[in-house]
Image 1 (cartoon, rainbow, N blue to C red):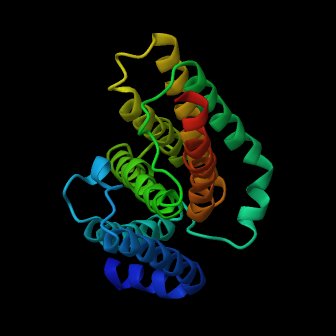
Image 2 (image 1 turned 120 degrees about the vertical axis):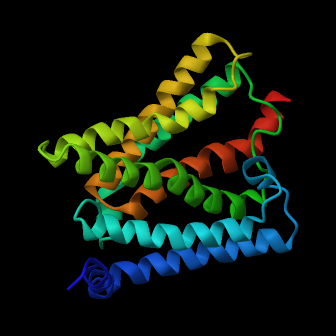
Length: 238
């Protein structure tokens, strides 16, 4: 039996996890289609002139294959029943991270157009949360693990895993703060550390629980920071 047959067998054998994943991705595609049909400009800052529906559909196919590969290797899980419930004891961390972000915004306000505003935000942020998880977590983590385990075969997998997690956790804060030269150094430093710890928490959640739970943590962060605070900050700051 070749590798492809084994991989296909694993996908078929774990139908419960993939059913949840397919339903989740179908929901993301539907939200994207609605925004695209409405000629929303929300995606322009992230994707430029590229059709967002095309990007999300491509991302959906890619993430289905990569997550199943990671599960096939025994490294991560897509979804397990009750994992989300078990992880709720760590929700206070998301509240802490968003509170720090809001504090910085109150002290050194971000641009007025930082957030997509309500009600469009309710459609946009579930989609962009999925896209960000793929770009900043799933893809680079899979790449680093495959690369490092292929080159350094005598090193224990847990070492590969933790080194990769720390490196990947640095990607989003680096991207978010690279163009903040005009902001005070202390604010940029706090934002970087706050985002790093949030990403690190998410990746530990991915390792401990599953992909869906990791996504839920980001979605909650976005609901507090972008949707709720994004709506009220205009009255507070401008």
